[in-house]
Image (tube, rainbow, N blue to C red; front, side, top):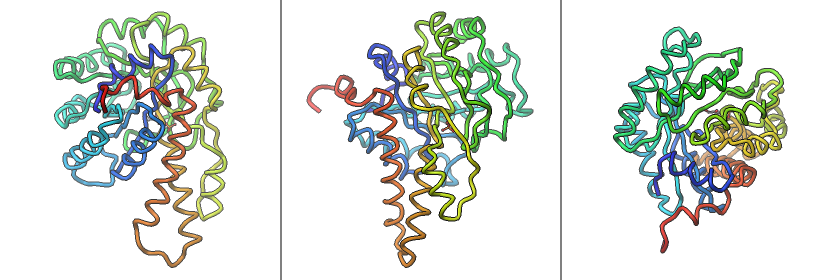
Length: 322
Ligand code: 13P
């Protein structure tokens, strides 16, 4: 059951939980994420980044992705464009039937320098003006989350914290449904700095924006076991530490309703695949290895759904009789 982001997060707000938003770049990952949602009775956000996929033809990929999401008709799911960098990215996603788009105008599309506030407002507003009439939700971004997001931008080695007063003005001027706030996390498998969440900052922004859904990006925990498994089987990942579960749960208590996670799923996938390939040296049938990786991704996504409190919430969102 395809939902908009606003519908999904309104229920999360009422229930005091967060919905996990999981990055996918092929159909097998989407299947794994949706299977985890079905198994745990959880709402879910399936998100894709423009330019980041196993397929060359974006229109083909997005159409198939939408079909896969819709085919899980018992799962309340949002199909979301993560980190749209331009008006055009968002317009294509709306045309492709996404139910939600993010316009990340926090940094200039061309120079990658922090955008000035008015330019961020202007571009975000233009996206809201095409999305809302089409029944599509919009997420904006304020501040700089930092780190490296594959397909989006190179390494950004700074975190510019969101300013509560600006957050209020940003929402008033743009009408976005959800707001990604820079509160101490960073993207990717190598995290910046201490990765301590500024919980009072989240609470302050929420107090000023009671009707806006707050989003936490860069939320992967970077499980040490996954990194160790990858490195034990030929990988070369540096040690890194993400946000722990306790901090994420404090963030939910302070008003975060959407939690973005890509890297943890990808680490689980890669660890399972490397371990399998090392152990089963004569297996060449691709589906056997793919199923192992999908299973690993399903497990980490299920675990996150438990941690975010979204397990068992689907029943209240699915039309009766399903
Ligand atoms: P991670 O890299 O921490 O998984 O964050 C993903 C994200 O925020 C996608 O927008």
